Image (tube, rainbow, N blue to C red):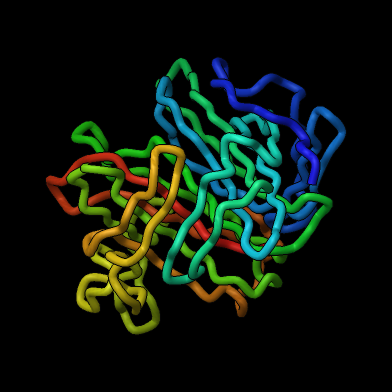
Length: 285
């Protein structure tokens, strides 16, 4: 598809007012109108809670099987910018247990941004939709994330559920992939509003330290040693201490109250380990 709006610069004040309008179209459903007149109404939201101000981040959406994603980065006021078919994203690819090989695509979207806030933190929403409301699956890759000694509990990620995601038939998968020579040992947990780790019906905590280790990871599967994510600096291999959680959401029934339709994750690490990581999410719409 043609490029809708190319944004490869840093967003100094994070998102010009009026550039993007966002409206709820039902429980968890997002409609984004870009400032060039393009729009989508089947968007899904991934919100990073209290994102660090002054740091540079890169968000990239890569479609599976020809899907053409459009992406918006939005601040707490629902204002932001859109991108589709960015030339800087054409190298991005992945090979993950829940997706298989996701080849590089000229249809990938990408936005580089730097949040700024007087408080030092700001909630930032990454919203992905389909060009012309196209349905399909995608992998969302967020660079710039890190676990540091200054962190409290970790980085909260809120995923807003909607009927579009459920009807897609795709699983919802959240990955933490160690970045380069980082020494971080990723740990993902599903948590409530007070960041207490949730448990399933059997009482097992919904968390994952080392993928593939049945005693340390709620999601059954293999470790990520044979997985990888490719970004502009090269291909990053997974390793045995990387983590992921996978959910079959096909049977989820949404509440009429949109404030109740979300999954929240805490992205942290095994105590004492710090370093950079990639946040990777696979979903459908």
